[in-house]
Image (tube, rainbow, N blue to C red; front, side, top):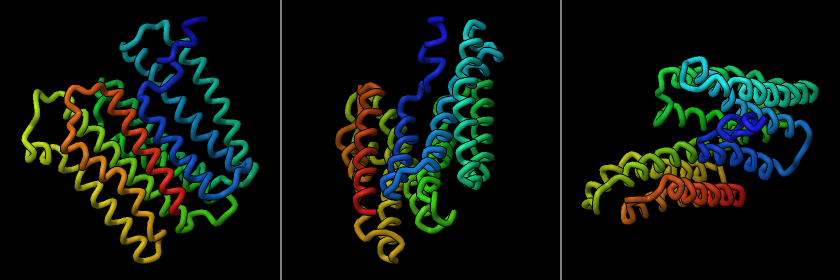
Length: 271
């Protein structure tokens, strides 16, 4: 039975991905200003679907020859557990007439899951920036779904919230890739080389900041909401003068988690 409770079977191994799940959940709850059973159904569905990826991935690895057969039974067991929770959450959503959430999120979610399995079979699931960015875009939709509960689906406020969370998540992934590239450097690089490596992240975070300023200017968002995007932009500037040479990936991930948490707090305050 001890084999059934190994973390690599029932918990996602990409530890940094947790922030992309809980950030939209907290954003949606705090900004909506309420906690109801219909929202709980959305949260439960999102978390159970997020968790079931790991045992499903283990099953794919077993059948593709990448894992031992002894992992198959535990993986099927956890798929059944998470699947049961997911079905219960769907029942809640149907009961509260929130079926639009299922309709809008089901196809993209299944598509992303299939894409992941193809990458796993090809042994090419690591360092897939585009896949990670699109996955966080899907997860960011959780916040909009929570906000729309009890309101008209697809209203402007929910769409703006989804877009802002998506942009921040994508920027954090670009930043993480930049820092991981810096960690293998030998010695200190000249400033122009550091800027060249960080160019895409700098551009992304700057565009996000300007875009948020424009939203405030045209009254699509709070005038001071751009302060939330300042955190990631300033962190990117900081990385130019303090490269992550020799850093452990966990150190990089922990620092980015703090940045994401600060962004979330400021987003909620200035929404």
